[in-house]
Picture (cartoon, rainbow, N blue to C red):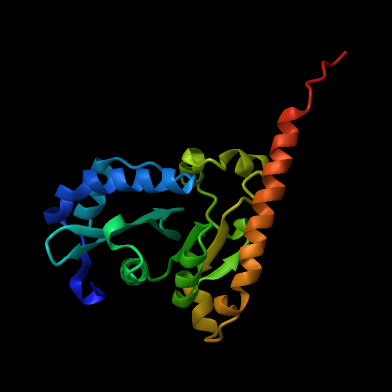
Length: 225
């Protein structure tokens, strides 16, 4: 099996048949990782396909192999490439990277002036994002659209996010700013050189944030006199 066995295209009406199985795999994958994702219904994915705001990878036998879709926030000022999923049959084939590239190209085509951002705990995703030109940023540089942050409610770390007033969490925030890219061609961040640092940072954040949250829950409630 090689990448030549896959075809990655902009999803359309002909691919809506796969919406149910894609949703099921998204939920199963999140549960296996012990993380959460914004839950989406098959109808939601179908709408994305019909609007031309999703890409799907098809294997040579006609089965779906991977999927990702576009969401917009802040009246189109921000764009997120969401719901990246690869079928368990085709993981570790390099397919995720190719899907990310395709959905990034589609996002740039549809929303050339929008900032593209993402939140992730996965070093593999961080590496792919880095190759596309994303840079690590603080949460304050992301959208303040409440609808986006509501989607984090299904994540197991949502209590940490709210305890930090949406200023930090386990995830690393990454952003592609087309205006900044026009100003300079220089790359300020090299993931390959700094991946070990971010790996340690993620572990440290997870430990310290979780411990702080547990301690806050253990504090006895004192009645005011």
